[in-house]
Length: 352
Image (cartoon, rainbow, N blue to C red; front, top):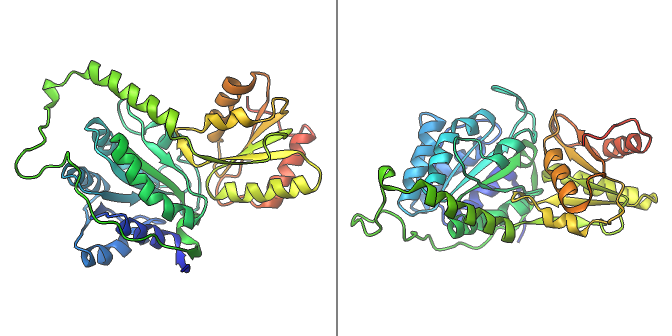
């Protein structure tokens, strides 16, 4: 039965039900409710909660927990996620899964508390040192986020990668009806330390990094081939296709439905995986499309780079690609429609 829940609380409870038994992190708005909830909820189910002295300490505790084969979680926002990047790189190097939740807030440096999508490039490119990729999931509703938690652990364990759930301040703080999943039995993965050294670890100086790089590329290619996820509507005959993810993807869906009712042939691709980016969706677009338009809650336009790349790769190089950045918050339907009218009038120029 559905109940009204705040996004961060629902995600935290979904993690408990997915078998998470270690949370380590440091509080930061607008993600703090996740760790506050787990501070008392995890001990109820025999799990461990640690408020670390810093984000660096927290991600390294997560690394330790994953090394023991248990399902682990950390969450943060903005600069907190930046501080975790070295640990995420280490987890990736050791091929240890973990779920990292980024409740994105706007701004450079310490930033602000406004909901945003300004971390897209960092999360999809790998924010730490080295040659690694994380699977990046982008829910547009609380229910979708709750359902994604179990999927995140299944994907992380299948491919031995870090999974980032990139939510937004708006999604973390708003309330919606949610149906929670059933409880899963906690599991310990075979690679974990068991006190007997049953699964041997190879030291850094004994590894063949060149051979590992080849194997990692094979793994990432497999992920790109098999794990692209998206939602689409109206793209098969569209003159203009919007691309938007997360909560702005919801308002963009509302905008394209209203525009369709007004006689405009428009469609939507909503990426559910930001990495791997759903390039296969572009194969379904009308071959005579006149333009691709991203709707983004950031100042600079970041999603537009991927939208342009796969427009040129899958469709044609001469198709203009526009960006509608709304700085922060959730762009309203009326403003998306107004910007679309400016594109039709030639008042907004393409980015690519």
